[in-house]
Length: 287
Image 1 (cartoon, one colour):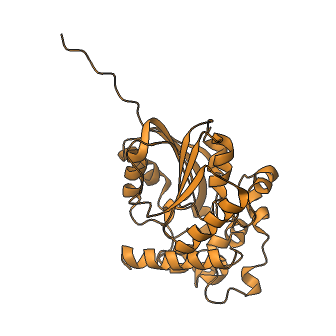
Image 2 (image 1 turned 90 degrees about the vertical axis):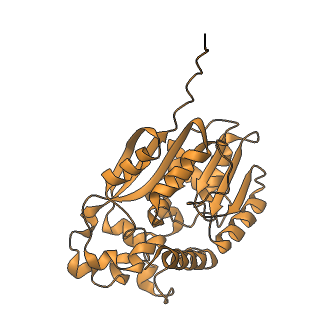
């Protein structure tokens, strides 16, 4: 499949999640008990580093359990800053960021799925968030001005892009000099079986689109970021993968995984990565 076909399928899948409250996304039979027996969205989010306070402070319906970490907790956000969330979904991380930057700050969420944007905007209205806005757009072509944000965050979204270099180039462009990139994502520790790489269920489940960890870090550096490093890394067990709604209950729904990928989950890691856009060099005065 080409890039446009993948984007179409991803958009449709996540649009369906937005409409169905995020509880399941396992193929056409979303009511199947095998897809929905692994816990609620709050339970899933706690596994990935969110506190009960985080979960309870956002509007109901904004936490869809679609993350693989908590980039807001690692971003050291300050009052008055402008934050950009790539793939903002129903707004969960945006609302957490908004509470940290305060009324003088601003949070922008970007999502390519209309249903998610509708839901996020309604959540912002219900929660009374005046410092959060949501824009329709692709993370490879951000509708954001150059050098206009202090921090870029993202949670388990960049792995879905087939042009990750373009995503990081765009993140670099919109960050102010000295601005920070802090993302949670899925990376590979070893190659996946061919059957997984060719599975659209595995792709929309944040697995087949992932790349090797070293390649991921090098892609960020190639965009111009400095001090690029993995701040946290954890194994991505089969329990976590099958419990997360965005996975589409991969172990059950992606044909051939159990047979051909006995060590599949040793190949997957959840990482929290940071990078810094260099500050502008001071201009030398000509004599």
